[in-house]
Image (cartoon, rainbow, N blue to C red):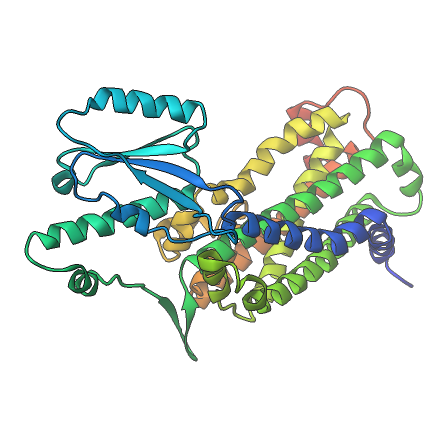
Length: 428
């Protein structure tokens, strides 16, 4: 005879995977995310279809017309994409009037901005850029690099070093980072950081989405009193365990499909991003992903899901309406969010005392331990300790939730006090 728990789990699983939301989210969401991600990178790497007009006011006389030569790109019609004009300066020029006129031109959109280099520019290296919009990060970075290179050439010219020789002396270094593994080494660095950070957020979202789904299902059955009919054939514990197990299987299937799609996208990153300039080259380079990442993600998803799903189920059994449920769920949700407030420290220092301690706390361990494992595999004893603590915590939460659920699911009206909840747990 089939266990009532498995029967309830089977029904919850079938209801979940047959829903239109599941099909749309499982299949449509990855394609939608890929589409918008690609669209975002296309717009980020695009130069725009209008020329950028900038005026240079060089009181030092060190840069002059050379800055315009740093931006040779042109549109198909031959017009320069970034036009830089140099203001002629002599002793008779009123600088205040020049700057006032330039500000007027910027406000009236005659030019996009102007750069001011003071007389001591060669000594101070300070440059100022004035514009209506200063959020073009690519333009800002290119202006900074070009001015830095030109001021270095100017300083070296004072020592009789020509531009060709200066370019050789000032050749910049591009540092490539590689992670040492048992098999040798693999590409790593900022790409790895971004990849682990995104997966950490994905783990957080999936745990919260499916954990809260259990809470909503419990609350709906309680408020509609369907649960009274269901409890005529199954015990409260069996109903709770089957519901948590069934919804968890739905989440496991959906997350597995998303991960599979993500790894296909990762494998084709060179083809997808190769022609997008510097940004595309950065994305196409890495990271190299360990095959163990998929099972680790699924394991920590299940651990986090079971722990938080039981908490949400207990809350739903206690409260009397949706508003009260949300009030109780918000602080619980922030507990899992806490590791994502300090991901930089955890990813950069996976062996720190803070990372090790937090990865042992059941509220945080799913995300923190996954992040640590993705960057630098912890010692096996830490895995055993974290799994053991998490497993015992899930069993403890199951016992606590089951005792609250068996009475709370049939309680209506005024929300019980803390003393009443304690009596539910301790009563036989």
